Length: 324
Image (cartoon, rainbow, N blue to C red):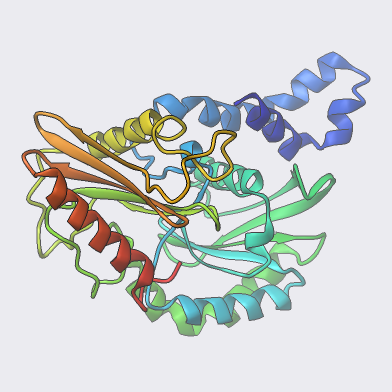
């Protein structure tokens, strides 16, 4: 937590200003701009009601899977090159639907802080602010630029001094004008966050999957389409989110160890956790580089939950239309 807060200070002020302070009072005044981001880091235990992501506790980037991803990646790559950068991503409902290859080379702390910053600035149609990358570039700033394409879709870039906002607006309209139909189609994947042709077992109330190698996560608090309905509507989205977050905090690092943990698990023994309560059940399973957690209704036998969890993991990681 302290490391993340320090990186948040570097994000806004740069490492040189923090290490070579000449006027403490002036620095304290300058650091006020960091307070909202630090508040979000501290809100980890009790996030805001509309916060649906898990990046703040998993330190993995929240993604969305859509059938149009390859098309978006091609447009994004050309668009980024046209404005002189290799760092760009397309976000839909706050989750990354496509990104340039270099975007994924950013450190997990940098990706997390950018995601938190963009959430804090969510009400602005566009932003253009200087930031330092705490790991990659703590002394030389980039410009973080976000341009909203539709109400829920936005392009984010890390640029140098150029282009100007006017130039960016012109290029954004030129490159993305033919993709608005595809963007609307991708938007409809929310809140399931997976393509419509992928159907999960009806007992899956919500899920969270971590790819510990790529440091990405896929999740949904409402994995069913509006037409199919939700048989478990007695659990609100906020309640389901809090259950999964508490489950993660309870088991990760104690019952299920992450690959970079100081403690190692016994070789070739999969890690698995069941928890059963009066109104719901939980199951977590580690398999290769994935950790999956699913919220189930109460009353299911453990072997049945295990079977559904394994099939869900296979569908959401191996299906040709679900690559992330």
